Amino acid sequence: MIVVQKRLSMLALLAPLILGCQQGNQTTTTAAVAVTDKRLWVSDMSNGEYRNPVLHLDYSDPDVVAVDGNYYMTASSFNTAPGLPVLHSTDLVNWKLINYALPKQVPLDHFATPRHGEGVWAPNIRFHDDKFWIFYPDPDFGIYVTTATDPAGQWSAPKLILPGQGLIDPTPLWDDDGKAYLLHAWAKSRAGFNNVLSLREMAPDTGWVSEDYTNVVDGNKLPGYRTIEGPKFYKRNGYYYIFAPAGGVETGWQTVFRAKAISGPYEARVVMDQGNTLINGPHQGAWVHTDENEDWFIHFQSRKAYGRIVHLQPLTWQSDWPVIGVDEDGDGVGEPVYTHTKPKTDKPGVIAPQPTTDEFNGKELGIQWQWNANSNDSWYRMDESRGVLRLLGQPKVEKTGDNLWMTPSLLLQKLPAPTFEVRTKFNLASSSKNAEGGLLMFGEDYAYVGIKPIDGQTHLVYGHCGGARTGCDESIEDYGPIKSESVELRYIVASDASVIFSYRTDANSRFTVVGEQFSAVRGRWVGAKVGLFSLADDTAAHIDVDYLRFLPQQRK
Image (cartoon, rainbow, N blue to C red; front, side, top):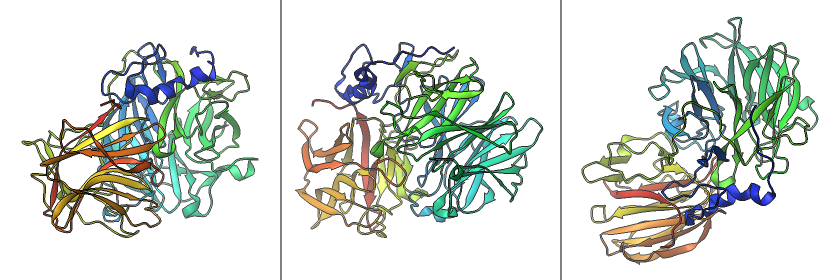
């Protein structure tokens, strides 16, 4: 039996989150891990317990499969490329990003343009017939599948197995009798309706999926239900189970449906909601049964600018119904935990920082980077001998105003913690005199500190734009010409996602603040992103970037 901590006082419950915000100053108490290195968020408390979230990163709609004591996670990636991240863990707490199943999004030409909020929606990863399968939806094209024998290796080219608009959140089930099925939800923005889960027969090798379907769950017939989506399909003890969130990303809950026959009728029960916690949602995820005969649930919580961060909950079974989290009043509805005993494992996880910093010393960009659309080899060069990233200038695409929203060549990565500092160094001596670019906090509102050619000279500028998706023109504040051979750009992110930008031209001097305090906001279905960019009408122009470093907040 899983041993669950007794509920603490509200102050103690909040401690993991508060300490997460304090760790930049290396605050230590007996309730949390002392952060003495460059790890920005640590879930493993090194005392047999963990704290939520296990990943303070925007891995929306996470799904996990267990194979021989190893766990593999994938998540939505929307418009960014590469897409379909693959993470590995041996304890469900410590995770490592090992691959992307989708190097570029298909159709290739379609996704050469940023398609914010489109692309890869909630995927499902499974292990069947000695290989890994990821089913993923594109709400404008249909449901795809890709496979691999090694999740860290090459995945097959995505195959469209069910064309159509509005088909989302696929989940397969290979039944005991050899038959296979595909369950999915619907996007109202494309299909004209939602709150319904539909079941289709499918070839075991996905060679065909039936055009006919049965609506096995209709939330419109359930009092108080709205936006049932993100289903995960399982079988246990003779029951078919559908785990599905309802009520919306920000304020919803977890429901489980069960039936003795795959086509129903299905009973419904709420098995976890926010309750008295600050963990809103809590939204869709995956049930995981371990080799140690324990049960766990991975899900996300929407945290505005930080995106949809990943939590781990204990799961127990009562009369063949799951209860997720802690159910202190015994009503069958659990609440999320802040801290808990770690899952049992004979393969202890390695406590290691998530990939963030990139010194640009290798032949490839760090695995953490994604582009704003399918990338082009002409956008950058890795200069291994000098240890710099050469960002080649690309045109700004002004489809929603004079802003960066539709520029595909933005180099981006997720926010890695509640608070952090990020710095980059531009080598101006080897950069083009007509280069324009900067260090970016990117969302539907965005801001950056960077460089811009003005009157034939390189100037230090601060740029910002509010409402880039719906149309805005950048405002530029000019801080004058830069005479030095390099400039270090920086911003600091506070626990309320407010951002302060600054720069310096001498490594021994203090940073000079530019602009006003900026409030980071999310993008289209995603969190805000840390980014770099280089703009020019002449693609021979370039910026040489020495490094991009993430640090806990410091007092110097």
